[in-house]
Each structure stands twice: as C-alpha cells, then as structure tokens.
Image (tube, rainbow, N blue to C red; front, side, top):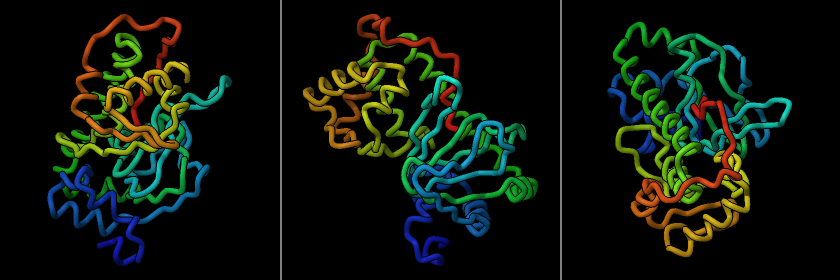
Length: 254
C-alpha cells in the first residue's frame, strides 16, 4: 500500500478508511488510482487552492482539517471544516470550470493528489469511474439542499444538531460511518450556520445537558448520534430572525 511504501501511516487513510468514497470503487480502479496518487503535505495556514484557480484534479484528505470558504471585502465566509476521509475536486473533472472556493489547511494536513490529466486518462479507459464520481457529487448536492433548509426553516437547536450530524457523516457514501469527534470551535460552527456565537454556545450547552454531546477544547463529541439526528429533524419553533442571515451561497465542499 502507498502509505506503507512512504513510511507514513497518515498518507493512506483516504484510501483505506471504511467511510471513504475510495472504498466504494471497484478493486481494479482502486488499485490503479492508488498507484497514481501522490502525497501532498501542507502546514497549518497554507492555501491549497483559491477561488478561480483552474481545476487540477482530485484530492483525498488523509489527515488533518481543511477550511473551505470564500474571501471578499467583508472578510472570509466559512462554509465547511473538512475532515478525513474526504475526497473533493470532482466537479472540475465534469465541467473543467475553475475552483469555486478557497481551501486552506486549518491544521497540518496530508492529502493524496490525482492530477486532472491522470484522472481524465484513467476515466477514458474506465468510464465506470464516472458513475462513482457522480454518486459522490450527488451526495454533496444533497448536503447543499439540506444546508439551505437549515438556514431558512429550522430553529437554532435543530440547525446545530443537523449540521453536527452532517459533518459526522460527511456525505461520502450511501451508508457512511459516523465519526464521533468533530474538531471545530464554537465560533467556526457559528460562522457556518450564520448564528451568533452566544446562540451556538447556548444550544451546545442544552445538547450537552441532554446527554447528546460532550464539549472539550475545539472538540465536539457526539454521544448519541441517533437522538441528535432526531433532534435536528424536529420542526420546533420558528427561527430567531435576529440570528438568520440571508445567504446566497453554496456549501458545496469545493
């Protein structure tokens, strides 16, 4: 395996993790892509790509956290905090269009990179691969629609609960394995949901009191994902209009 050859166990996690999109591929396609993937190491704060950059292939996040957003005159809009074993970059394979968001390393990260020319050549020989990329893209589109619903329809508690479950699942495969620990701060969660930090703190305190989560420094542990999922599905009261910001943007993860 690639991670063994390079002597770094972090490198191959995007390939072997049970919840990875890569594990849904046929064995022959897995083998070819694993041989062609090359590791990329970034330090915290480094930029992987910027909005408007040309598409440069597919990436698999093996270790660390990526921050996805867009920068404008008003500062950075935080859209997602991405954790392993996340794969992204497939949109540019389909349409050849520029990158839609900025991606920075929130922590030191390890990625696997399959360049655009390599992926297109492999897909030319193995067209079945397009179907698997399409499934990944479809899962992300479902995430986009769910996020729009959160922003406009759900009260703060349901919005927070649903986003935590979505981040734990990461929408990579049909039946993803939920991760139990999410590495993010309350401020980052508040920015993703367009809620005030105070509101998010109050909601998390309530979820913790109900035994659904446990908070540690920059970590939110999911103690009861099933109950948390039900909490996010309940309509509840009307959203607090003081916390809702009209947002005309996608939360597509790159």
